[in-house]
Image (cartoon, rainbow, N blue to C red; front, side):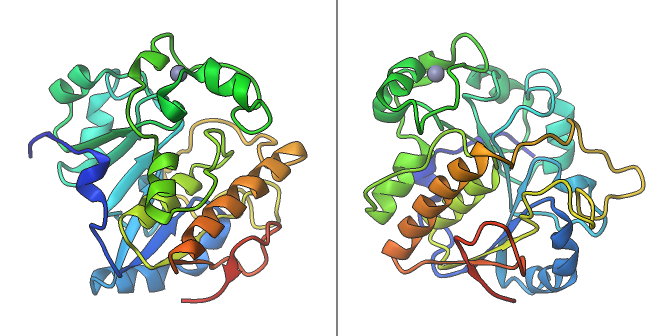
Length: 271
Ligand SMILES: [Zn+2]
């Protein structure tokens, strides 16, 4: 398969009127995996996968692979990893102000569709300009993942694309404490009208454990931290509310399949 460069304008309304599945890593994903697999095989849904989707038992091979946190080596450092799991067909939607790989390097090394996007440079301004304008909702502390981050500004960010698409007054922050929100954002601008979230537990310390069932050799890099406690919960609720209200503005429904999440933003439901 060959490399193909995509931009956000290529995917706007790509799946108009369809059902999206936002597939996260938490233990509650076990409850829905078989039904989602069935719907997906019957071409009833568009599935978004994140980070280590391929490490799970009964993994559902997603239609899009979203990345927005540098857990693994960058694309430039380990292209084989990305080529293997995209299998030349799954578009890799990868935030390129988090992954330092240059476009030239990605073009040379990837053999799948690739959509690099920005999460940070609102108004085409630098990270520090944005941080100084809104330190309470931009990033919890000022940093960039690599030195030339702000040279990549100039596009509309994913958040601004959602705002443009939904005409909502606000957009969510670049530091959402869960990459799931970026999957939801893509589903919205692709025109999906019902968006189901599975496995978004946002709690590493429940009785059910940290993750949905992993394959025998399954491996998730990084360590379970306190990412979803204390002040971060307030931050998450702020961003969840914005994405949910943005969706409502155009009649798109976001439904959480978790029966009892600590965050109550999204309507609860079943498939
Ligand atoms: Zn920057």
